[in-house]
Length: 195
Image 1: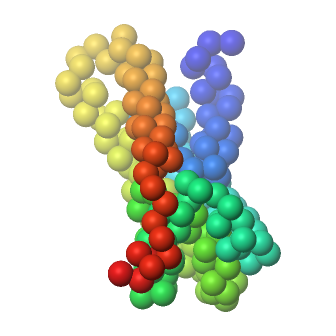
Image 2: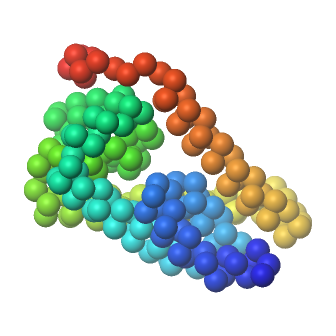
Image 3: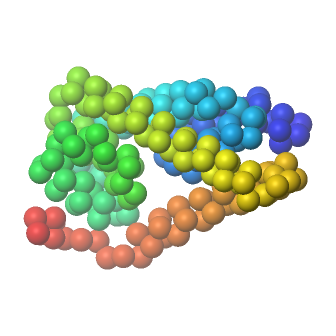
């Protein structure tokens, strides 16, 4: 199976799964691929929206069930959890609407929101609004990157798969870099959370 055929066959499912797990990179790639004509942009956005909403709703309910105990056992989540708790206390609605746009707290936020006992209906409604905004904005960014590639690369068809692979590799590398950097940083004390 060629890469093009694989994109046509599994592209939307890959975007849904990637955004379920944590997927700015895959969504940017999805937007880029849509610009190149392999996928449809509205369906890329729908797949991303679906993955993001389902993932965050699941993490929210897990947070209600096992919440702070689970988070406290994850050493790498301590720093983002401290930030997320502070922001959640100060700006609950705004935080729920924007956490998916804030690198570093996106993974831990739904757990903490669930553990904080934010009402499920409130979270679900705000989560849907946030996911729609996020899916449209990030997919549009990938689409714009594809358009920019057309302007700068006159023979973009020759280079598009290499450019697509480069975007994916850079995204994964940045994610790994920040993840490793977080692991090496000392855990903030709970008193730092109050500062």
